[in-house]
Length: 148
Image (tube, rainbow, N blue to C red):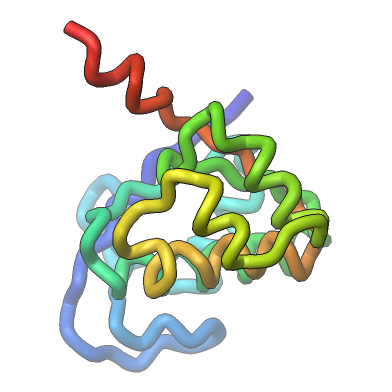
């Protein structure tokens, strides 16, 4: 299995060809500029892509969504998402939302969503819902994380 960790650096507004990631410039591990189309092509070759982001940075979350959309297209829909914003014991509620069995309000009322879910994470979850993608809750439940 191949895997990769992507580090994203803001380099001011720049004009990129292909995908519309205008707020970002990508760099490889050697610090060399990497065009968006090439990045997506390279990422599509991997089985697992880890996306490093700041939880409270809306631009990072927008970029997550854009990279996910591009990978979805490049990999012909063969994408599974996972995120620590959902705790493992909320997988059932997430699955029910993705399958249309509960609405957004019920998800909000029944799962422990982060404060910035509506603005930063919901677009990614709704993309998964629209494309019928699996979305895995990867975080440890709070009751275990808070034990010492």
